[in-house]
Length: 218
Image (cartoon, rainbow, N blue to C red; front, top):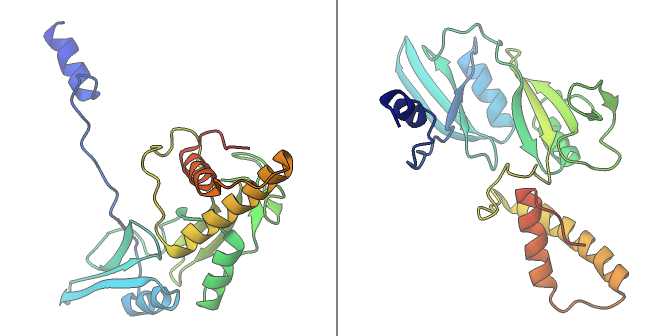
């Protein structure tokens, strides 16, 4: 291997070294009125993590959506972007109707749920009839016009999540996953015609497969 090949492999992470974790922690959104934005996101039930008014030229406010590993920052001196210019900020949910109801109750003007038959396809009213992941959406904006997109995901694409990293970020997500496993297990028992005493193992297998995108048990 020559020096040029070695440098190329190192740059692409192919030289055998383990990749360093790069965890998306915070996204900055531009707002014109900090207190108005703070009131809006607080009303949605998002967790207020910080509000540091350092000076007249710098203030940072941090909120975290329920169950989210990443947060948002806004304030004064945070970003030079025009207020309201953030768009397509994804909020992944396991039950889009429940999420929409919660946001509306918190004061957000959320669109009706719509779905697409595939990427880039036109929007169709209502949730995906088959309940397929990635295809059902709703949208809303904050008072400045920064736009958010709800996307319902219950089963990940293969390879999207490590099969050994099954996690649930809230009691609600875990409960929803258990309900889906229970429904699927009910169909499993109908097919076999007998009670499955090992249902906890079946549930666990189903829930891990659902998150990792593996083939679901039947």
